[in-house]
Each structure stands twice: as structure tokens, then as C-alpha cells.
View 1 (cartoon, one colour):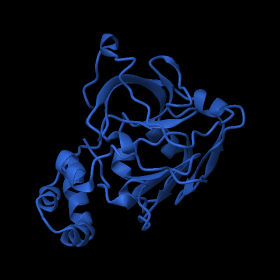
View 2 (cartoon, helix red, strand yellow; view 1 turned 90 degrees about the vertical axis):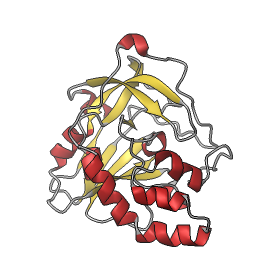
View 3 (tube, one colour; view 1 turned 45 degrees about the horizontal axis):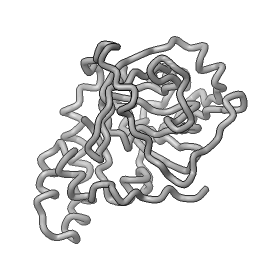
View 4 (cartoon, helix red, strand yellow; view 1 turned 180 degrees about the vertical axis):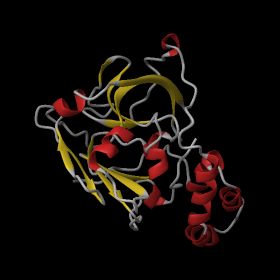
Amino acid sequence: MHPIQVPRRLLTRRQLIQLSGISGMGLLLSSCGSSLFEDIAGKTFEPLNQSVETLLLNPQKPVPEFPASAIQPDALLINTFDLTPQIDPEKFSLTIDGDVNNPLQLSMADIQKMPLTSMTIRHICVEGWAAIVQWGGIRLQDLVALVQPKANVRYVYFKSADGYYESWDIASALHPQTLMAYQKNGQPLSVDNGAPLRLASPIKLGYKQSKWVTHIMLVSNLSPAKGYWEDQGYEWFGGL
């Protein structure tokens, strides 16, 4: 897989922290003038940031949704990269494994037989734009329940067909409005928007919402590779 090129228009790490940092430590880092201190302190205080942000996020509290009349069909921008994977939905398979008792491989037919959940939420991109979108799909918490995670699971990794990778805390993954979506605005998801399956949630910034997801792995510890953008210096939690 060829790595995704970084668009030049993306915010710098300091700008990202200023916009999306929830914790006081994130604000402290954003005000520091030394990039070396910022890198060292960011690694040192990541667990503290995570703990504070987790306390601020009530994992089961729903985010208010919008009426269908508020949908902005043309406002969801599509980031253009060199590689847009072409996946045959008939051959697609989602693998869910890791620290689980019942690893699974699911086809799109399997997924679409499960209860459909629809939500109309605001998608917010760290680049500074937003769009109200209706997503339809299966709750991630329902998929996680099927694989029976072990008690030590704390994180979830998402791997995509284009080589993109992300990681979430388990509380955010189990939020009732975190979906593996295959519909957008009542229509089948397009390839540019992540078909056949993508993450969608009102509690995370856009870069956390992976497209073209083919593999979900539940784990007890984060590896050094936390996420595509995070490994370039962006905030890991990425919460709203």
C-alpha cells in the first residue's frame, strides 16, 4: 500500500491542539514555544490527557441530533488522496478480532441483516469546516458484543483498505451513536465517502472516522503506531 500524502492545507500540530484540545494540559502544550518541549511533554502527559478527556466524555450520553430538514447534502467535503480503493461489496469482508473470545469475519450481507441505526449529526473536520449528515449503519457496540471482548480491552484499532489506520478508546467505540455506516443521507454510501463501510460518530473529529474499514481489532494496549495523523503529531483523542 502507498502511504496517503499529507494535504498541505491541514493544520499544524499546534493549531490542532488549540482547536481540539479538551484538557488543560493540551492548552498548556499549545502555549509552549519550544517544539522540543512540546514533543516530550506531549508523550509524557498523553495518559493524563486521555484520563481528563475520558472523564469529560460521558460514554452513554447521546449527542443531540438534527431533523432531516437540516441535512446539508453538498457540505460534506471529500479529501482527495492518491489512492481510493475500489472494493467489490460482494467480496468485502470485515474482520473483527484481537483480545476477544469469538473473532468474526462478516460480509456486507451479514452486516446489513443486523438492525439499521440512522442518525443525523454534524460532521466536524479539523480543517475548519462542518456538515450535517445523515448516516445509516450498524452500531459498533453491537458488533463488539458479537465478538465477546475480554475484560482487559481498552482500545480499538481500525484498519482500512487504503492503508489508513486509527485507534479509539473503548468507551468512545461503544458510544450508542458510533456507527459502522454504509448509508449516507438515506442512500448507499459512495466509494469516495468510504464505501462499503466507514466509521461515523458525533463524538470524534473527522480524521478519527476511518473510511473503507476492513479490520477492527480490540486490544488492551496501544502500540507505538496510534493512528495515521496522530503518528505525525496530531492529538490522539480527537474528541468533540
